[in-house]
Length: 121
Image 1 (tube, rainbow, N blue to C red):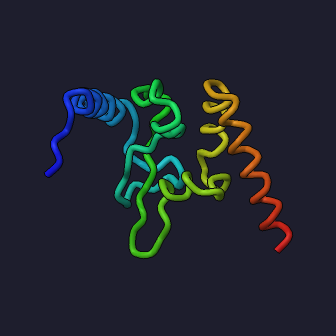
Image 2 (image 1 turned 45 degrees about the horizontal axis):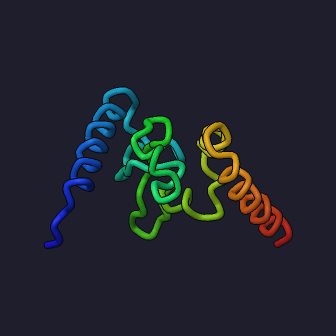
């Protein structure tokens, strides 16, 4: 078993605290499809790898369902180029625009390209 550094352990503990606060403040359902009968994950709207400074920001974290029984979950869909199909797409994009305009324009262009691609089929 790999040992966790003190720094990572501190981050993990802080995340657990934020996740608990989110659980108490919000309903426990997927914001991408409104389902509550599937396993859920805390999903970072802007990836932690891109914006470490936002990894503990509750506004950057939502519940998305996980893949199950061959069904793609909203967590997977959000990380793909078909995120525009999710119910929380516009809300998430507004948040992204407010905190990271460069990332917003990057993924917005991907989404527009994918919508045009599927429209042509």
